[in-house]
Image (cartoon, rainbow, N blue to C red; front, side):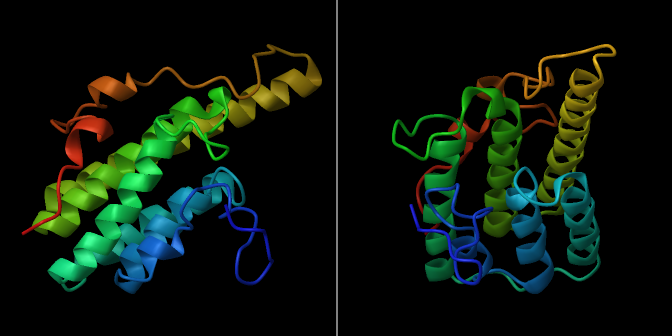
Length: 189
């Protein structure tokens, strides 16, 4: 884990075993920004970051990035695999997410799986899958935020940080896409 530095390693990126820049630096501007906002949302901008990610996906859909080279794809896929292992709590190290973040981190993992599919195939279906995962994240985070406000006021209190009930991570979240653990396979040839 990188020591936080406000310029090179802000705290909202060092919660991961791999900083998002390890992925975004190899992507086009719009796609890279969408990834950045999805990964930092729980730690910095919340719902606003997720709305920004959705906007950048619209731009990507309107004018897709150039496909990555095989070497670039391999770098991105490797970084995504490391993040997905952490997000799905397969990482037993110090970067493992707290249990109350399971649903948020699981949806982020599914987003990364859809990103991998998009980079590998260029099919718009994967952009739609990424969009669906961002929208599910938005709903989840807004519910958690509402629950936290209710807890503070004592009205209709819920347990703060409790994962949303939107799907089983190991089964996938619908849309015909497999769960994150089943999707990332070997490097593209």
